[in-house]
Every structure is written in C-alpha cells, then in structure tokens.
Image (tube, rainbow, N blue to C red; front, side, top):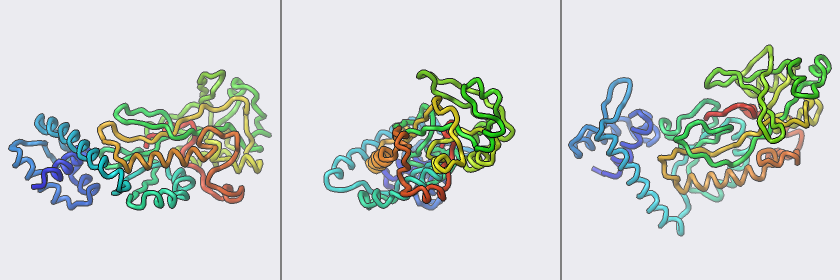
Length: 334
C-alpha cells in the first residue's frame, strides 16, 4: 500500500465529506477510493470513519489521524517545493472559482500571460455565482467580493470594488435629483437580495470616513447583476452597482450619477483559501499574478478616478461587454 497516497485520499474524503467528490477531485474511480480507505483502516487496525448512505463522520481515531495527515502532507509538499523552486516552475492542477463576468472581462483576456509564465499549471477556472465550499468541492482558491464571513478561511486582499449611485435620465426627470441622503426617502430603488440568505441588502455610503446605511424603498428586487443594471436602465429606480459595470452607460448618458459627493462604501476583492491547506507554490503564484493584474486595472485597484477600464481598449468594446455578476454592495460568498 502506498501510505502517502492513502493519506492524500483519506484527507480528501474528509475535506469533501464524500467518497464520490473525493474521487472526482483526485481523478480516480470511486471504487479505488473506497478500496484505499478500506486497506488503510485494515493496515492501521482502527476504524477511521462511520459511513452511511447520507453522511460521513470521523471516529476519534479518524480525527486524530486526519490532523496528523494534514501536517505530514503539508510538510511533504513544502519540502518538495523548497527543492523544486530553484529549478522547476509550479505545476499540476489548480482549481480556482470566481464570479462569472469578473473572469470573462478581466481574468480570461489575460490568461495567456499567466500560461506563458507557468505553462505547467493545469488551470481549472470555475465561473459561478453560487456559494462554493472550498473543502467539500476540492477548490484551491476562490475570489470573493465583500467581507469575509468564514473565520476558517484566509483572505488576501487583491483589489477594490468602487460603487456609484445612478439612475436613468427618465427616472430623474420623473422623481427629481436627490441632493442629500435624506432625499433618498422620497425615492425608489432597485433592490438587490442575497442569493444565500434572501435578505434585501441595504445601501452603504462613506460619510466623513464612517459607514452610513440607508434602507431603500423599491418596487422590484433582483439577485442578478445583469438584471439589476437593466432595471436601472429601464427607469425602475436608483441603483448602486460597481462603477466599472456601468461606466459606458455613464459616459453615454444612459445613466446619470447621483450624489457624486457621497460615494458608496467600497468593498474589498479577496483571494481566499482554507486555513488548513498548505499554500502551495501554484496557488501562491496565481494569487500573486491576479493581484498584479487587478493592480493594473484602475477601477479595481482603488484608482477609479482615472475612469479607465483595464481590459477594454475602446468605449465600443466596453459598451458591448456583459456586466459583472454582483453589485458592489453585496456580500459575495463564493
């Protein structure tokens, strides 16, 4: 029995809480995973986990063995990386997940650059808007927008979403132009509700260095960014998306900025990975590269005043591009 492989398979079963998902993330037949775990238990002479048709749970011996396996595998990977770093570039499969249009508009157009630097990394890029469980789905790293809620995860800030409050000229003509936050009580907004909790998200402004939340009345709520912006363009009310989502519409006059002296609270973009997972060289170089990429994008690096989109060469190209999949005021849980 290959004991190192058995440790890898066992920890992946525990992390994913599934023999099937572990087999998929390891590119192994499910039967092989089952056999390896059975042989491991026989070799150790203990039962590592309780298995039913619905769930898995570790025995006390299994929990202790898992903790030691995590440390051993991290030490092995770190040792190998220390010898490979001088003469071998990072390699192997790397699973990343991020909001769809963030990948489509910014990351994918620059992937040739990443592949040129690291040709031996097999990048699996998931473009999803749903919450992703890193451990259970075998994902190495995700990009998230908003505050990190899970304390078991490590986050490295790589960019910033800056918002803008705006509305269609038709709506402004009908409802008037608000001048203060108090004026918003007389206005309607397109509300955005969280796909995770169903809660309608309040607006947040940065006033004298402090966050001020505002509850907005509205006649429609959505949980999709494209629909959110479309509702704003159609005159359903005020919206508060990320600025680069609507920059072409602001430039063309299809949308008008409201309360330009009161900016929406900016939100961090973070690369997130588990505490318990050793940060391998392939994860590290991807995070370093994505941070560098975002730093070159004025509307993602905090330099929004430059009014320039990083991946689109002309206004016409940006005009035809899809919007990002999450408004700036949402808590993105990927």
